[in-house]
Image (cartoon, rainbow, N blue to C red):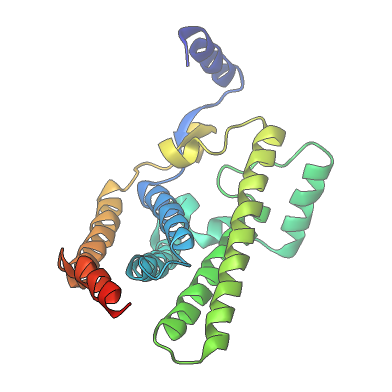
Length: 239
């Protein structure tokens, strides 16, 4: 952003009585982007036997992150709590109606429609973890693996809808809704902001995830450097 556009943005904020306020705390943002990385990685490695351990590790990571998010939804900062964005069906209908009319209701945190998508993705992630565990441990036969794949496809569909909704909402609200999930800041009045980003809790989440990845890496079976060559040579001799 150049100096001209920056000064124009500051002028617009002052003219509307708004300023930059902290809305999304660090744990929420860390959770969001770790989920993005974990799901993308798990999806890309789903069909590869070679990367099976990585796929499983990322799947369990997602389940752990969701467990944290449920806890943080009860004890986190103002806009992280479920009580601040989970609303009755009437509120969802009213918000969607305002979108159709082209004058969407403003919400500092998650809007009612976004809240439904978030809850759906949290629950579907748990379903992915349960079916994935059953498939990985061969506890239910081939149909469990197919169910796991179907649930994962449902998650992908939810992600696509979520991304599309964020882009459309950004246009309708005339507000970049992606940037706040990086910086934590949105336009608003001082009384609407949260006081602290809670980086200490975010650091604990990051440390826990990286520790889990390290443990999985250390427990992975390591193939000797010449093992693959020996197998190929043995196969050639059999031929």
